[in-house]
Amino acid sequence: MNYESQKTYIAPEQLESKMKSLAANSKARFGVKMKGNKAQHLLQNTDLQDFPANATKALLALLEFGSVRIASKHCKVSEAQIYRYLNQPDFKQRLRELRRINFEEAALILQRFAKQAALTYVEVMQDTDAPQFVRLNAARLILEAGQNSLEMAELQAELDELKQLVYAKSVSPNLRLLG
Image 1 (cartoon, rainbow, N blue to C red):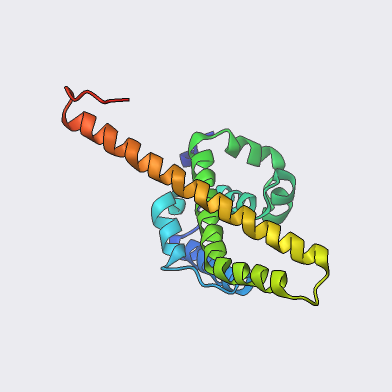
Image 2 (cartoon, rainbow, N blue to C red):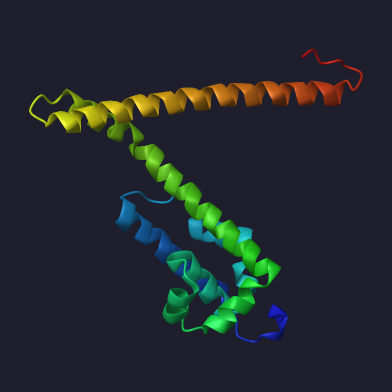
């Protein structure tokens, strides 16, 4: 089914209002406000204003609820129609893009509270009144997080080195890489 054949579209100003509402809800849920105008970002980068109304509703409901059955109930679009949308490459691409944006926002929220979480672990670990298993668990989590961050730093260094080698090889194709 071609989206152009469907006649009902949501006006861009209505979509922007919906996206701003989603952005405001993220502040209420997580205590952080999305940086920049996320509604405008979503509209510009995913061309939602060109999407039919039902496809847009289905897209937003899938983003919010994940399941086709639940999304169908909330957006008042049949499950069969949502499955037809999911077979459309542009619909799937936009859904993936919106999920990626949501995931990036979640990562930013986690980064914002990472220091506080680490300090909480240290506080629990040092609390002599806390049960021993709680203190041991906090210590274990601190060690694991430290090990994970060290491994990530090493992987990043290796990746940077590989990027430099690829760049050097692309600039000078006759360069022989020593291994």
